[in-house]
Length: 396
Image 1 (tube, one colour):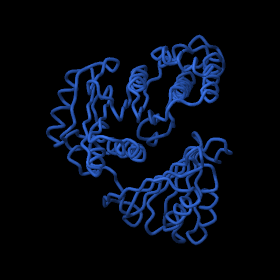
Image 2 (cartoon, helix red, strand yellow):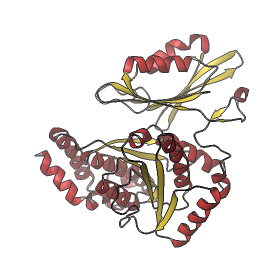
Image 3 (cartoon, helix red, strand yellow):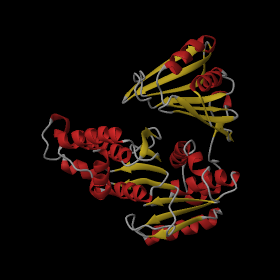
């Protein structure tokens, strides 16, 4: 649902100050063309300290984390300060619902609401935790998933949930999702479980296909899907580059979760050629650009550990630019705390149509400047040579 920003922020303010019902909230991302927020990400949650209930604001920028506790009676001003900053995404979890607010380029607010799911558990005052995927779901038992895997599953679905309506509201009675390089398929199962419920609410069926080159992985996935009782979840042996999970039909959702090195690029290239409306990729092992940086003696990449970390950032920045050039609205976000996995970045891309000529030219200029400065050519550009050339021609 799209509404005006003032109304949406007033609603979020009310939810944040309703501390008996608030579980947590997160402000992240930034709105283009405005002063960047003071912190990359702020998490808000109610806590009880010795002198009474407080709202706790935890701000994170890179490795720097700061915490501020404000008495509930004085929290209005702190909440107003937070909402006055140019965050692009607001996520609020309460005892009854999960609210996602995304602020568009035009300054409107796209609001998605979903009912909360509850799990009794430990914590301050035994507050119920909201879960989009039931922690007692038989999927976890079948997969033998422990606490860390369950947290990754929940975090992943929370990234998927606010973007799914754009896919689920389309025409037709079937939604198609594919996980390219699915591996052990924890997140394939989770995505299918959540999406199938959301699709049923709209009178649609969901078919999800996990694709992997290993026959033993595919066989295990098929057995687990049958044991967990997940109709519509299928697995196929095949490469990412050659995947055609639905024949001539286009996938609505393309996932590539911890596909190593250029396997992520293969999945993104496949998604672009399909024109997939929604793409979720959690990259892993950015060795392609890292190898290209090896001869560069700049201080930033002279040492191996710095070169590895910078290659991660540079690769995903270039992937983001290329996807934008080729018609996607892109966000690169942290989908789970690094304590659970160091590979915690996610590329979220929604098909928006090719940008106008001047916008394309600006994105290409940024891309060219980065590749020229560091002497690299990302794998995704090599895989989409024809599409990139066409975009350059259109930008002239």
